[in-house]
Each structure stands twice: as structure tokens, then as C-alpha cells.
Length: 133
Figure 1 (cartoon, rainbow, N blue to C red):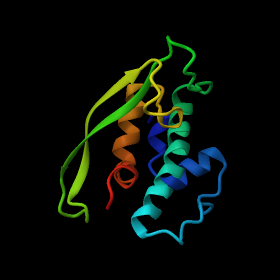
Figure 2: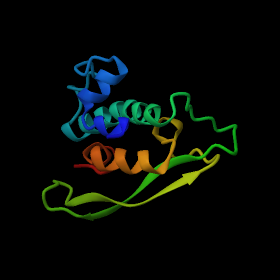
Figure 3: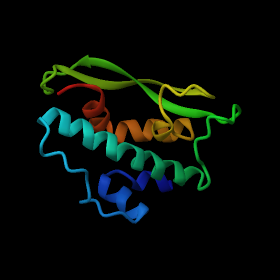
């Protein structure tokens, strides 16, 4: 088993990163869909950082380095009646960029394998972040 394959839950990520999984932003004053969005945008950078460390302990996104690849998932919306929005996400492809910042450094993976793993194992967070549920 590869090191990143142990990171299949928020709790596992927190254990690897020496974090308390119960420490989350206070969002109770927000509507439920906005709460999920805020929690997803809080958790995903920590998850991505932990996955990246499994492949390259020194990896840090640097948009001034043109030769550094930054990977991210390209999801596609699909009908999903189990979601209140009626939409779900599936992984269409993964792509890399060298200097564009439209994804943001906190959401960039260091390689394709980590990107696929992160999306598939934490898909609900991507749904919470990208679709109003």
C-alpha cells in the first residue's frame, strides 16, 4: 500500500498532520449549504497538502517556477437525485498547469496520481465546495 492510500478520511489526514480533527471553523451562523462550503474549503487544502507530502515531502506550490507542474481535478456535473441540488460530480479528467492561478495554490496537487486519489476519496468535499446542495 502506498503512503497516500492511508489518507481516506479527514481523521486520517489530521493524524498524519498532527491536527485535531474536531477543530473546524465556526459556521453555525450560516445556512447549511454555506456551512458545508466553508468546511470543504477549510478541509481540502489540508487534505491536499497531506497527500502531496506522501509523494514529495518538500513540495510547495510556487507560481514563480514555470517548470513546476500543478495538478488539479476537472470534474463534470452529472444528474444525481440523491443531492438536493440534483447534481453530482464525477472525475472527467485531471490536468496540470505551470503558472496559471485559477485553481489556487492551496488546491494544487503535485502529481496526477494524488489528484485522482484526492478527488475520488474526498468527492463529497468537492461537491460541497462546487455545488450548492
